[in-house]
Amino acid sequence: MKIYYSFIAALALATSVTVRAQDDVYPAKDYKGKLYITGGTIHIGNGQVIEGGTIAVDNGKIVQVG
Image (cartoon, rainbow, N blue to C red; front, side):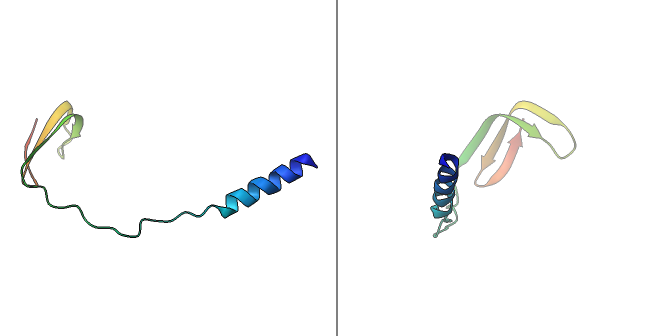
């Protein structure tokens, strides 16, 4: 009987929790300037893979990969 009550309590708790999505979604502002992403694995479109590479981004455009 104890297990039955524990199951009912767990079920009541699980159904009482509500999940809500974020109400206000705004896009991020444009980043103006230079950005370097380093230390990652880069998969280039021609099949080449660069380990520990760096991607240079200037005003939202990729300018260098290496």
